[in-house]
Picture 1 (cartoon, rainbow, N blue to C red):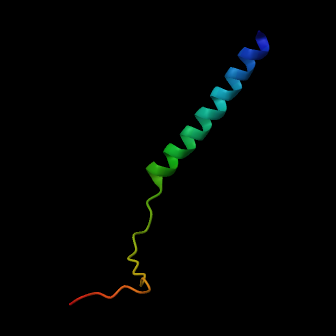
Picture 2: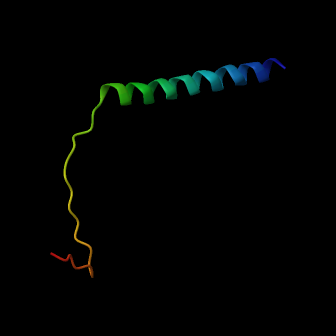
Length: 47
């Protein structure tokens, strides 16, 4: 039974580290917005 508790504690710590890293990334890093225009072959735009 102690090995189960040890596994759950380690899994919880790893999950908390991953969750914290993802939270820090979304909180502190803002992506640079840029406009993209990709032509689609075979499609004509009516004007």
